[in-house]
Length: 136
Image 1 (cartoon, rainbow, N blue to C red):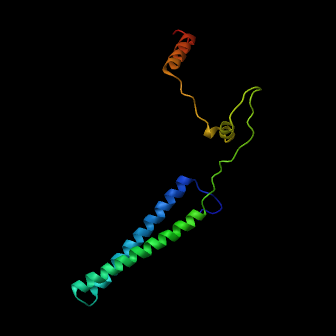
Image 2: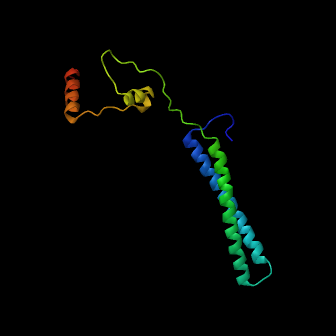
Image 3: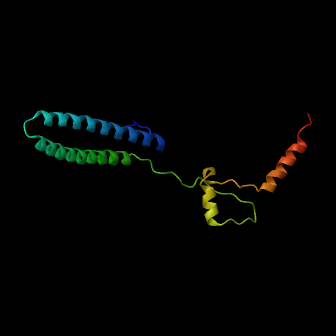
């Protein structure tokens, strides 16, 4: 579907939504065409209504099965997540780091978190910057 390229997760979700929407649109079209054929045919009004209900249930079942088949194919093309260790973690001599921290750091900067400064530290930084700023 995407050639030799692997789409991003967001793009793949958008494509799935488009495919589902198109399948539902086609099902609505064929359902309406079938209802017109039933209404033009012979039989009483109640028999036609019963026949429409039977066909509607059959259409819903067939549509759901078709969507499951499409979803299965799309899920087969899903990229495996690549959260493998990117390398060695180097520490200063004498610094001991727990294994779970070392493994998390080895995954790279995406998995790091930024330390939150306290309000007092933020105020102190503002004072330091204002002292160094030239008077204008």
